[in-house]
Length: 109
Image (cartoon, rainbow, N blue to C red; front, side):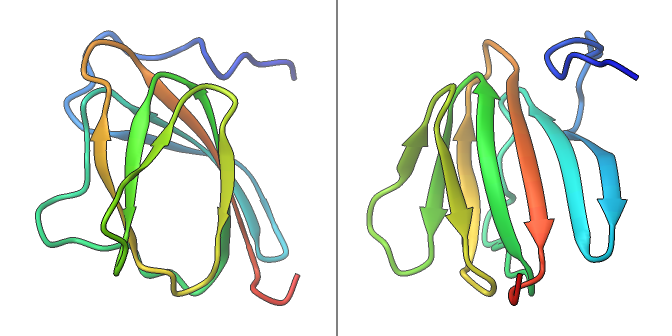
């Protein structure tokens, strides 16, 4: 079924919205919608799988543990985060929806 990932976003978004779009054999594809949301103070993602992220709309800043500067993302930007690479979302645009496409896959893939 056809779907537009930039549509069907609630007007009120008290928390970040995460939806699993597809999942199979260790691969998971998610749509994540942020509107000014960021990682809680002191929280770091530290996942066992690799993660490919593509920013579809909005803007965001990621921080990787041990790096002094944030990585700024805007629509069309993508990156692959290796397994166990600690990172956090420092900022997302509070004035517009930041829509991410995230693909999680095994480290050996």
